[in-house]
Length: 389
Picture 1 (spheres, one colour):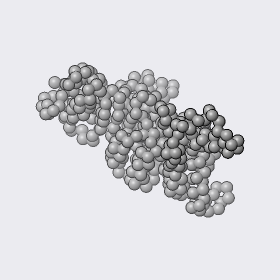
Picture 2 (cartoon, helix red, strand yellow):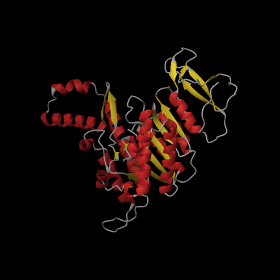
Picture 3 (cartoon, helix red, strand yellow):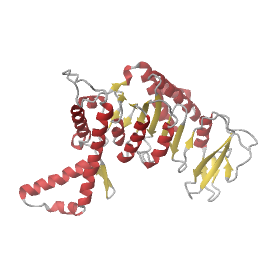
Picture 4 (cartoon, helix red, strand yellow):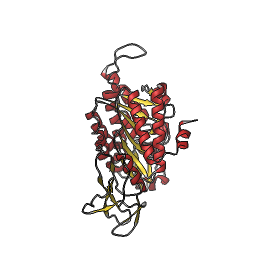
């Protein structure tokens, strides 16, 4: 029986899925010699939710890292990509906190996620893992397209005009919608992705690369910079990958002369990562959570059923009452919910009690708000059953 079928047959509820995930994170840490472990993951199948790397990731991402004390960390990354500028900020925080950083990719780390991975000292993947092209994407008139493809198209027009001395009339409507500023913005976006990779690879991934495997000669700083530039160019080559969503696997990366660790060669580590990833996907499938920032002892979720809800685990197990802030998705009223784990707790000013049923009525517009996932999360985080008035 496969691991996925095993967990399906166990019919784990939300709380049990959380606890089993924590168990597997601990197993990953043990298999990796006690290194710290942190997960930054998006539900890739929930495309209508803000699953991309964005500004709202900064606070919960850094908050969860602050729960960790060691100097070596493994970051489990699952992301469709997002803003390279935010990826840069997150990496600066990680590299300021940890001396050795490894990225574990059980599934996909695309686009800006790939850029983040290039800041690791080590990259761990499996035969089914994938990174993605880092060619910047632009939006114009409701359409998204590659910055490199955009520039290549303009250059093709330019070459044709230079060769023939005539501008084809079919190009006129296209060129009328393109400004010099947009052309420069496309070039800047493309260059930015390459610059990050060219800067990070020599500094971190190639940090201990001292000898050429083929010649035995010492590796110079210039060698590291040259290799980084080649890899950045390859990852950015839209003409080669054809689509921004193309999966770039271990063999592709090794062909670029980028060292990748196949974690499936370590049985204990592979088992723990596979189990954790299955549990992560199951939790995404069974709840409205679309992003998870998680350590072995704490987690923050972002979910779609209630706008702007952030639920953070607390290490204290003696607390009998907590407050959770949420917002009505209909009228945007902010609501403070009091969650009690002991009977007879007085209600705090400005709060409403967690309802026994799975619906909370907004005090302003009377809209029913689904709180079933919130209940599961709170009970899982605090390892206590909620009591009701």
